[in-house]
Length: 535
Ligand SMILES: Nc1ncnc2c1ncn2[C@@H]1O[C@H](COP(=O)(O)OP(=O)(O)OP(=O)(O)O)[C@@H](O)[C@H]1O
Ligand SMILES: [Mg+2]
Image (cartoon, rainbow, N blue to C red; front, top):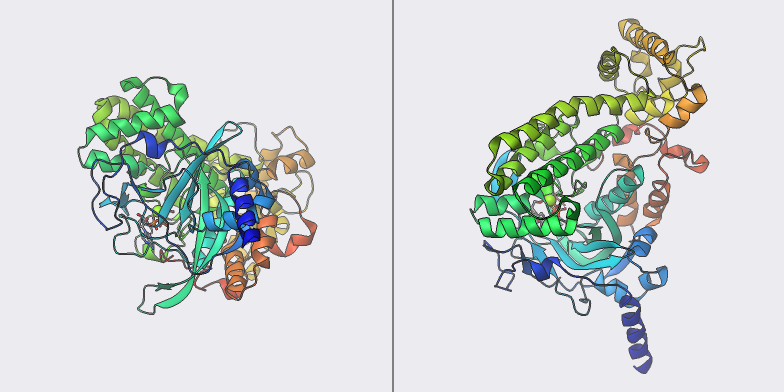
């Protein structure tokens, strides 16, 4: 008993290295009711909640980078206190966990109050000049849980954990993940919403970001005509996250909106560059800091296809398909503009900002695509070259990652035709005949001609291209392999992919098997090409 107490004390000391600096739940208005009963929560930015105690928590993986970002060590991560805190079984001393209130436009329609139905913020931590909010996803019910259970399952938690860290290493703005744990509870889910529910292992991810505020966090107050809370929240956001914009004023609010837009467009251009399809770009899943948030039914482009979406819930309308993601960001920004309007009251100024975003989008896209082609100089036919490539890429199923990575091997002076350089990327190489083959050859002729304008030699161009065209991404089937193994108690694939995806742009000799097209078994498999929102 004495030894146990000493051990516990040691754990508490280890955890006390966290430099807690709560602000959100101290400076903003709280829900006065503390029960978790589902309800509308007016005039408040959050509700205090306690995470649910779980049956048998087990830590499966911890991110060493996030540990050190928070000022923790791997020894801390092995402690009992760490396990308990990051599975919601113990609350950190002097903290008050809470769920945030937000609304959102879902699939184009105003959905009213949503809020953190299964995300519980533990605390904010300051370390090395940065502040991080720690949030458990899948930690139990809150007033915002609506008809659901507040929980998350292992498969979706593995996907969120691996992908958010992978995106970070790809250079995509994103929320991060500290830990992945099993709760020990069973969670009932109907994966394909087809009347076949089954029990799955419950899991909890601890997510980390400077803030989890979303567009919907502001929309909810505008929709409720609660201008007081709207202003309080906007002023808080300015002070904490956009302090360089200065004191609140109409001009500052306009500038605030502009910066959010710029960050969001930058984020979506990165998605397009690496072939990430978010799947549920509702305004409640749009971060106010331009971070990728909510790794639900996302997917990675395998065959390059503007019309692809992984989300089966969106398979009819395909609102959130790859090719429309930038447009959707604009649509979402328009909703945010409407929410901020009462504080600004200058329609023209907001419209001008939105118009500029639209104008910039085309240019940003061209710059991004040119970087993938290794083009630095300007030529008036560049946009046409990119368009023609995208057309021919979509005429045959062509693996995006393989294509762009291998394109770096193209030599501008060699007589060999380009098609052979990228041939590995074709899912059905035998189809590349006749007119299609001619179209490919024609494109490579133009590309070779265009490359003559570029100063760097082939080797230098390849080095530059390899910094924007990743070699390894979390292909849909790869995450599924990690899930299938984990379901059987084998967590080694999680570790393998976690390590692999830390260096997505590097050649990793022992990892060539992951630089390959999606295997045929994964083509129509649930979890690989078809994801639902059930998580
Ligand atoms: N199992 C669940 N229990 C309670 N609420 C849920 C559950 N799943 C989703 N929700 C809530 O439904 C809304 C929309 O869900 P969505 O799939 O966008 O979010 P999420 O994956 O739960 O969370 P986040 O956006 O925080 O990553 C959110 O308010 C979310 O909290
Ligand atoms: Mg969400």
